[in-house]
Length: 237
Ligand SMILES: C[S@@+](CC[C@H](N)C(=O)[O-])C[C@H]1O[C@@H](n2cnc3c(N)ncnc32)[C@H](O)[C@@H]1O
Image (cartoon, rainbow, N blue to C red; front, side):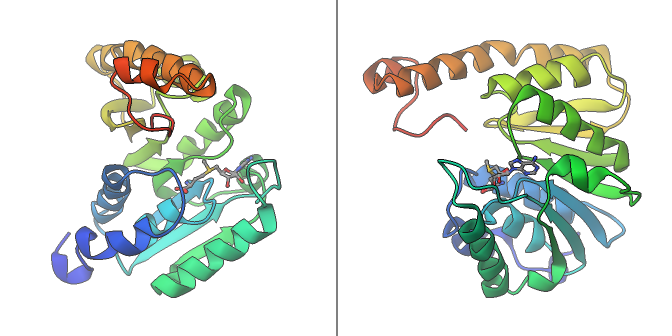
C-alpha cells in the first residue's frame, strides 16, 4: 500500500502503546501490516476481544479506508471491570481520531456472528480463551475472503486456544499457517499444504514451554522460568 494513504507504524505506535493490554509492538505491527496489505480497499476487519483497544487502534489507525468491527461483551470479571473498559476503548478511539472507522458491538462473539453476512479481509481473534469459545470463534474465518488474513493471539501460549487450533485448523482445509510473531499466529485463507500443517506442529514444543512458564509464574518461580528463557512477571505473549 502506498505510504501516502496513511502514517507510518512507528509514528502511531507510541499512542497505541499508551493503551493498556498484552499486545507486543511486533504483534501490533503484524495487525497493521495485514490491514495495509488489503488491496483494493476499503479493508474490512473484524476483531473478537477488543478490551481497552490496544489491538483495535493498531487495526484502525493503519489506513483511513478501514472498517473495523470490534466485538466485545465487556463482561465484568475479577480481572476486567466491564463498563469502564468499554468507556476506555471509546475514549481511546476518539483520542486517536479513528472512532469513525470502528463499530463497537458489545455482545459475545457467537451472538455477533448470528446473521452476519458480510465478507471480511482481516480477522483478529483475541476474545475468551477457552477451547469451546475459540472453537466457535474460528467459524468467523468462514467470512474471510480467499487470500484474507486470520490472526490469532495467544495461539501458542494458551491451552484452550492451541487445542482449538489443533482440533479445527490443523486438519481443516481452509486456513494455511504462515508463522507467528510471539504467540500471535498468522493464517491465510487458502488450502494448507502438508508443509503448512507440519509448521504448525513444529510450534508445539514452544507451546509446551509457554504452558510450563505460565505455571511457574503462578507459583512465583520466576527464577526457574528464567532458566527457560522467560524474563519478567508477564505471561509469554
Ligand atoms: C485478552 S482481552 C483482549 C485484548 C485486546 N485484544 C488488546 O489488544 O488489548 C480479551 C477480551 O475478550 C473479551 N471477551 C470475553 N468473552 C468474549 C466473547 N464471548 N466474545 C468476544 N469477546 C469476549 C473480554 O471482555 C476481553 O476484553
